[in-house]
Length: 80
Image 1: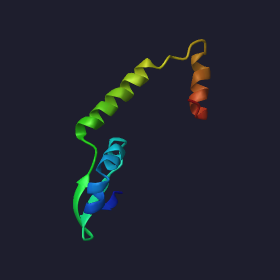
Image 2: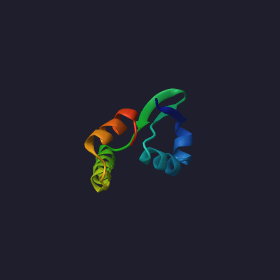
Image 3: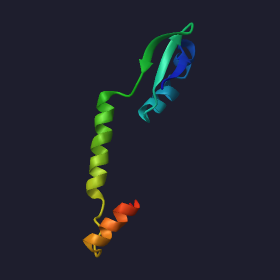
Image 4: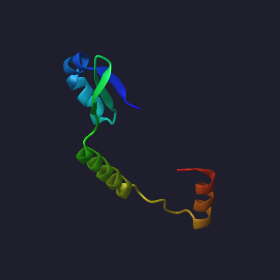
């Protein structure tokens, strides 16, 4: 769901809105109550976020010293 922001408020709060968009929030800019435009994260920004997530997963150390069946039980219990 997009948060509605009037055009005047969008103009005066643009730096704040851009910081929030960078964090994944979305806004609909309105003029006299009518939706005019959507302020959403760039597709390039989403790609960079996905690449960072993959890099973080690859950097995670693997569990060592635990038998496969024990690890399977942990997963079944919902452990991370």
